[in-house]
Image (cartoon, rainbow, N blue to C red; front, side):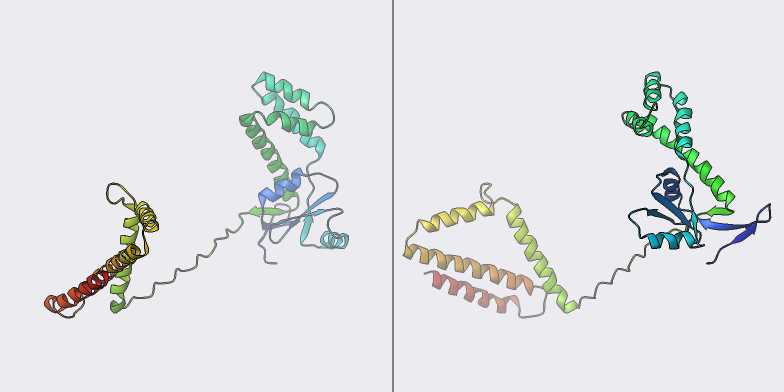
Length: 269
């Protein structure tokens, strides 16, 4: 157990220990007879053992372990004196009277806290006063056992490195950009109203209502026209996709587009 030891004025070796002040304060304040607290001389951690909950054999091993030091909590009598000393410091005379009445008789600690629950600022001042008294007792106890409190090491979590994005081949960039443009156009169609303020969903509903009222022959015509519109949209996407890619000239591509449109119109007829 590596420690740094210095010689005190009386010749006793003083051991540096990283104290967990919050846990040590809780141990000094809790003076219940069934609760036993121990300070680990290597880590500065506080171990609490409760009778009836912990294994009696484990309790005996901890008590016999030289690495653990039994913590002597502040007595109830001393903590009661803290309340007596604090009450005259309260400026609100009505609250002062309530606190004086609260500490009279059994259950004084609970009643004292209950009264302060309705007085937020005064409650915070009481906690600061009590913490100061506890710190004085803790420092005196550490000094009596030749222990020198030092700052605890800070634990800094490791942040995993973000994986680098895999490079995209130039040949694959065009399809990716085209898919992004297509998604954006679809989102715009959903967001923006069309034709007199009607949304896409409203137009689709109207189309379904019209289709339900048509006969078989009219439905066949409507389906053929819808197929034509679908083919024209595909042709536009196809032409946009290969707009920047090397290929046939506009004159060569023109008849192909016209052929697609003519086939669609023939199907509609």
